[in-house]
Length: 553
Ligand SMILES: O=C([O-])CC(=O)C(=O)O
Ligand SMILES: [Mg+2]
Image (cartoon, rainbow, N blue to C red; front, side, top):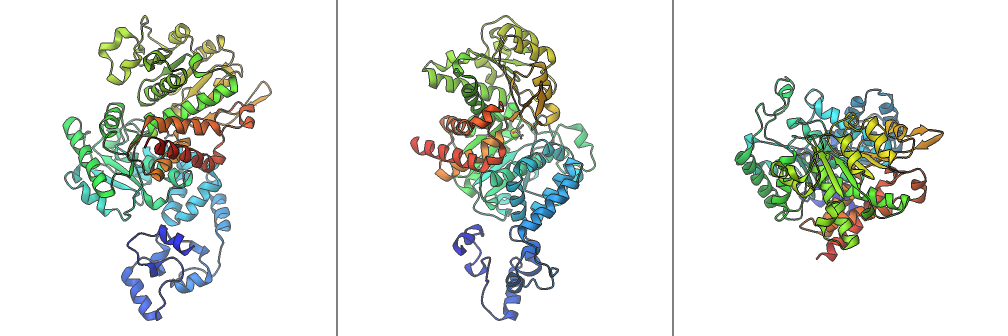
């Protein structure tokens, strides 16, 4: 037990400063030493979120760690603390208040924060993560109290390595980094995007079991083009337009080099919520030199593929028999499309170019077709198939007659009644995924999907929705969110000591997730298992990913 605890402490901490006991010396001497080291006992211990237990400190701990008098006499077990805080949180009607209460807890008592999150995952996920985290980022400047994570702005250019050294932990395994340009479907939130890396890494620990001290949230502040924020007196970031071109590329290059220099090759760098134009390029550029993973391209692709594999068990048939239509041809859309094509190619042994032909994408200008090829961004070009031009989604649905409709455009209410009625008119069980986040950006609500499809849709969303009763039957929408994948995927990657991410690892993660959908889940129409089992699911994904990493050498 002692040895185990010691592993959770920073390396530089001498053994005698381990959690229980402490050094056996005269009280005066210990007091001086305690003050000199300033962290591990007394008043400072209560203010260190990593080790603070609040009223749960036992009598002997209070004695050993100079806590007498600093706490009221009652000793309150962690279980009781947990009940108290859940009661408090449930009193708050406004989601943002719940978010702030949780962040406060994370800043005060990390163990209790994670205990709460693990034990009440279905209730608290929408609080610390999508959708509430989106609102928190929008208002981050106003609710900001204590900084979380590491802020690296253009002011630190030339000194990024030094900035990394200011972070108190040395053994980092996972970094989640954003530049805040495309936060969920909310657009450019600049420096206030920090809520996303913080939230994602809270899930790395709660859902994936990665040590909190091994997780580092980073926001790269390269400016913002969001005028409201630039004029907001409470904005916490640089007040300038976004750096672009060479300046941006140089800044990112310095960051990526510094990370590898400081933490080595085995630290996983998860890119999160970068805008399309940078996301693809960063993944391509650093995929061959660093251990990088783009959650919005690869994580979302893996979770959607898992749902589609599970749907084959529910409906019968194979992936290759489907026709796919996407609304949105950005990171998520093209990322998912490519992974589906890859899986079909694996299953059928057909060349991937052939497999792509069953997959169609609609962007803001209409169906992506070959006559548009010249003007398309490079990541859209593989999807420009032969077809006449079509200007809108409804006409595309009627022309392509998809069996699967996937929304990834970041825009709400785009799966209209006409669209859903159309796809339901030529499919007994249309598969409809409304993936845009947060809830306000969802392509349609669960109620709309089930009502307009007369209860026949196999439906999942990016943000959580409640069950819907239609025609006397309860329909439970699944949550096709990358939170199913990245904690287990990341755990598998760092556990195996991999130094590069390979597409086969993503397929391994999808298969592992699809295997976790039970008969009971299928009976409710679900193509994802419930989040209540997420730690077991993540462990299973991690094992599959690690096994694949070993297999790949
Ligand atoms: O954060 C989420 O809920 C999923 C995600 O990566 C995004 O929407 O960008
Ligand atoms: Mg994201």
